[in-house]
Amino acid sequence: MLGLSLGDMSRTTLFHPVPTDDELPPKRAPRPRQPAQCTIGATCHDVLVDGRWQSQEIPTLRLSGQWLAALGFVPGSKPQIAVVDGALVITAAPQE
Image 1 (cartoon, rainbow, N blue to C red):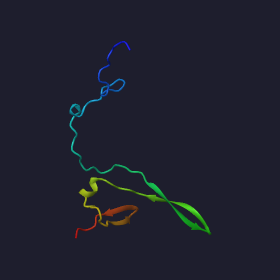
Image 2: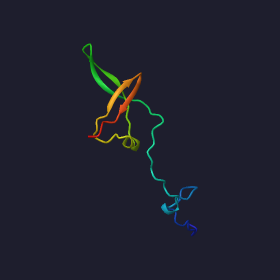
Image 3: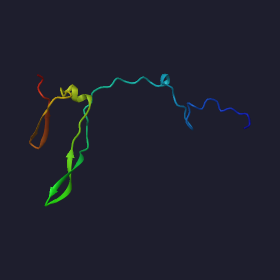
Image 4: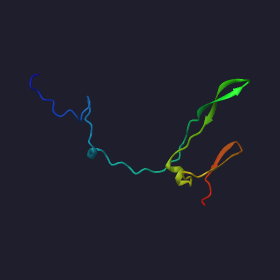
C-alpha cells in the first residue's frame, strides 16, 4: 500500500454514505388504512375424481391490518360472512 488511509468505511456504500439513526428524519406514527386493492391467492387440495386423485385450486382471500381492529374485528372473534347482490359482506361479530 502507499500508506493512504480510506478512513472508516463501515458507514458507506460505493457512492452514498449510510446515515445513522439520528441523521434520519423521525418516523411518523402508524395509522389504520383500508386497502385499496388485493390479490386473490390460491391453495391446492387433493380431491378424488373418478377414482383418481387430482389437485384442485381453491381461491383464497387473506386480510390483515390494524384497520380491521378499528372496525371491530378482534382476534378470536367469528365474523359473519354473506353474499349480497354479488358482493362479499363481512360483518364483525357482536361484542359479548
